[in-house]
Length: 319
Image (cartoon, rainbow, N blue to C red; front, top):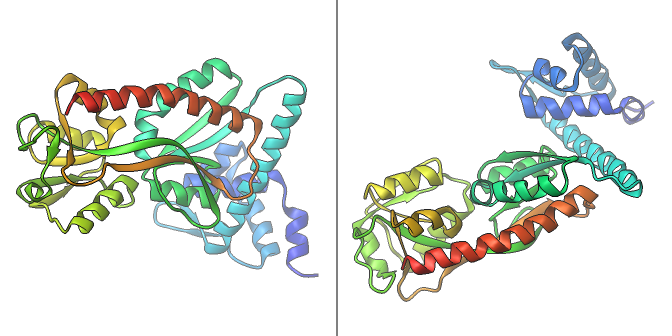
């Protein structure tokens, strides 16, 4: 008998969930606790799976445990299978007139911090029986988590993704320049690109889709700022900009309130088109949406339309 047959026979939801949680939690004990079993039982499940797979699935690290390449492969498939089972349960509930389920959602920083809170409030009021578990990180990391099965749905600002991922744009965004009022020599809300050489650029972390767009723009116009200061979040960047430490380029959703209050002024680069992008809903290509996911996307689209009007008005008035 080949290894494939016994693995298939041993592949139950407890073992699927165990592999998925080891990837999420970073240790066997934490994963066991997350699914409600003891560590000895979890270790036994792993030994059976490894014997059937014919490969090591988990390796010890100094801080806990992590999946091997074979373990990550099986965990991703397990997450997909669990997602399909969850969707089937939701569809059965929908037939009975219920709206329940759990959405495992990932979001890149700008939509995760500045769009999701309002959307989640609207969604919770309409669908109190649905749980939304949210993880926020840079776009690149969120897309990795989507591929691994750690999240099943994602909201990102990335313009492109792995062929296994489907991106559906739902909201336009503009990346705008911001600075402490009076710091940069603006004319009618624009800054001459050459003047960027006089300022420190307050930059997002690697993996940020907005920073990638800014870097591409700077390469296109052949401009190098006086220096770069990489900060870990939009909030840190805005605080540094308010202190006059440099200029930054951020999502208009991230800076709308500060511009409206007069803490920052926004600008575009003269002679250049607006730096536009789209936020997209990402999922594995071909994976059907569950009823709760479809409802969430509908809520997201309607709720964000109001936020888009507010952000655009604030930024336009701040120029």
